[in-house]
Image (tube, rainbow, N blue to C red):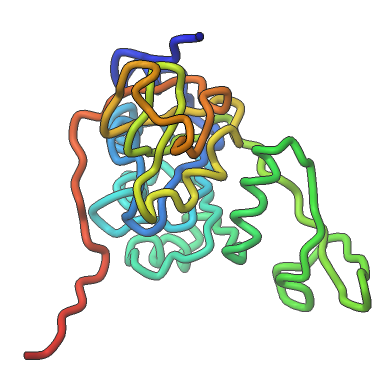
Length: 232
């Protein structure tokens, strides 16, 4: 059994360089690899292309990278919670590629499975389809979408073992699962790192073969993206 452990987040992200493409798991602020994002901010790598469903909020998640203008291009589905993102996009400082959420997930999963491209009806007849190959299937038009090509995939899991097997908790499974194994190198930060054999094989969501590096994060903050309360 290959031991995928690295000592800390610094070792895990040591070879990430300027200009690379990085996938980051999570949905909103749920299940984001926050220790890894903090390290990217600390490393001050720039001209990054980031693939993530959301762009965080102004003071947390990918919003921290946006504040320091470390992201050159953002490929996302929903970006409505980040005022700095909006400012940079409208001013032309940030290149943005908005992608239907299902297509974004499938472009990750296709990369994970080694499938180079696929056809989908989502986005046909809109700006999403501009410049893309189209084809009719069963009387319905589809557009050709290519799988993502990322240098790194960084995911966050609840538990993992030395071999890289991962278990996600609740909705933190979201984009973390299809992004695991979708980059050339997958880095997993976990809340709890356990010995091999501790995890129930029937509960493992991602097998260790999909992961190249794993480490236990030092801190995790449970943020609420939008607090909604009921009137008394």
